[in-house]
Image (cartoon, rainbow, N blue to C red; front, top):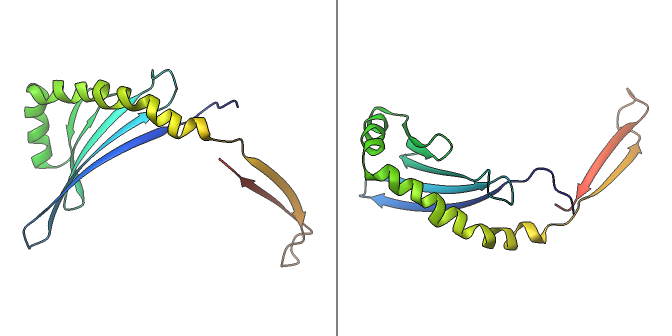
Length: 138
């Protein structure tokens, strides 16, 4: 099977509900693979409060970026502290470590898609025929 472009994403989510007023916090970590040799691997860790992402770490950027006033303050502190080194370590510890499992569970079990083209008469009389393309499989 030849595969020119593919992307696998492993996502870990930590959610915390706080109090009766409905505050909601979650952290989501994604490992994105664009090649089997792990050269294009990317780690993204997002921190969300009440459905608004306020800070994100992206291994391609190499640092935390804040999206709210609170997130910008945290990003400045975390980029100067041990949090940055810890997050860079997650790329190795989580993403690269789990890559063989992800590939064997997902990519190695994919099949080539089946594509079928057909010409049909359209429901209205404006055009003499319609070309329909349908795909089954991966």
